Image 1 (cartoon, rainbow, N blue to C red):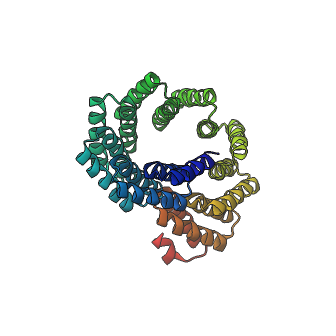
Image 2 (image 1 turned 30 degrees about the vertical axis):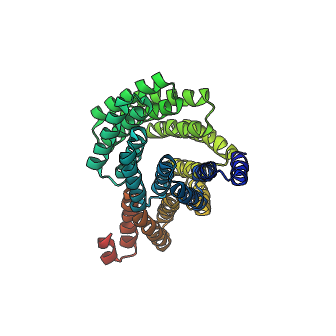
Image 3 (image 1 turned 90 degrees about the vertical axis):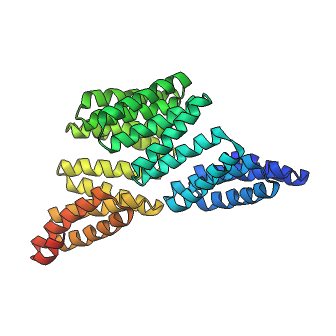
Length: 365
């Protein structure tokens, strides 16, 4: 519906020969495609909008297009291209003294450096964004910046700092009545407690996130909250409760056709049945995860599925099949730099090569 409205707006703008309105409509259509993860279409519309914005020298629109293109490349993990566009956008912000846009782009830069584990650069960009935003009293950007600093602290296992940042962001989100950010904060605080093995405290925050998701009727958030609650039950060995919550998450994911979430749910259920030594049930869910992961090109799910199916083959003394699955999982894990999967695949391959007496390859793994 929104795409149709914007296409109509684009058509009207062309008839009126209003170049600014035309550029805006192109950019908005690009944003719709970006949200839908249709990156090729998004880039086409953004670039057309950018060309038109440059032609009419509309700095505000140029900045918006550059920021949007950069953020789309960031979503695709094309970090060098993302950096190029975001940097140009910041330069134009400096020329036009656009403080608010600069602060917002610095947040994107901080998130980009965070993905690359360049935490010093990320922290510097985020702190600059927070400082600028406080000067213009933009609490929304401050809230996002502080939250991201919490994520960096969590990645560095600095749990005290992480909790401090997440709680600051939580207070601001409450003040702003930003329920989506509240959910993020509750989940992240829960993660900190879970990593410290305080499962009771973690569960309190996860359930608060789930209740908030109900308040705003956010099925995507709800499905994820149910998954993390299930993970706590799985950690505690309460497998029936874990499966119960994963089934609830599955129902929501099916309803909203979230295939990415479904592939992750099937992997989780498969792991629970594997832990219960119910290998056929486990295999059924791993194969469903592999099928879905392949369909939507969720490479993490594909890699994980191969490795787990290989583990079941190993348990069934099908060592050659286990090696084949382990090598497939390892290849993808290396390409996407999934360290957990690299470790699991290495362990599977080492054990499997030992079983068939190929000690030279076992040593290599």
